[in-house]
Length: 356
Image 1 (cartoon, rainbow, N blue to C red):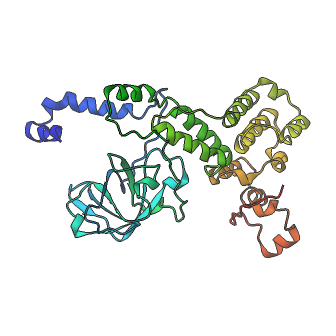
Image 2: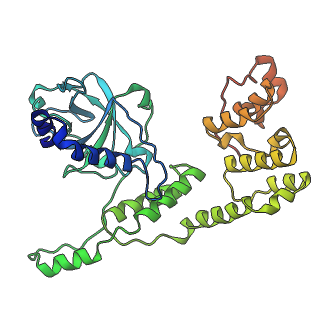
Image 3: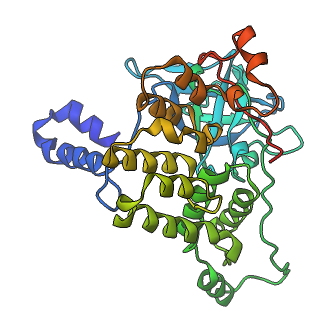
């Protein structure tokens, strides 16, 4: 605000160096520590706001109040009569995304550029999102209807680490011991393991839930130990990456590729396996179509399925095989599918259960 005031009073010339430094700082945020480009997407209908409590006790459970300063005229506008999406960082559990009904209360009209949470309810609203509180936490608030999901997961229970209760006065030595034990060095390691398991088995998997609990403890500075069974996937991915990059793969015959793809212990994600096969086909003048039966397209996202369709000949049957999981069902046969035109690629059936 001070810089903006000087800009209005003195003009741009005396402040050109400061403005240039700010621009360079924003450009530096586009790169990570490895100088790789980061994706930063502007969402106009969103804000990053401090969370405060409803001291007037006028909000019901599941409600909130939000008044934001608008771009352009700089006037505050109260959101009302809509649902908003709220979360906070870190967001490792699907339940860390929550929806609230935003209302306009005259008693809270003096609060601007913050989100007001109710004091009613069985559980604090901030605690439902990554175990947050209202001591300075910032919350991502979005009212863009295209980004608000129709269904959300139940919030996770975040239990803090047990600490011994003492009634004696806190001394300087107590503070020194506390900060000496404090460490969050495991945060990056746990986060990367979480992302690996989320890609492999989904964020609701038991492994992801266990890592989410460890991450929550690590955020609070507690020393944690990652169980060995959570490290297995990273080791397998490393071995699989070496296998996929091996030049010996180019010498595989067609039969050898079929044998390789039929192995259940080949430690690659399904989409990585498809791309690996596609590269082999391109180098050996083979057809990707001949290997489609070895892939489980039900494990691919919509974007990944679209990529696979783009690498295949223009055929309705092949598009249906990739996009419509009903064609790979073991419960219904072709004579039950085709008469009712259930084989269309526009019908995006997805397998919910497999007894195998």
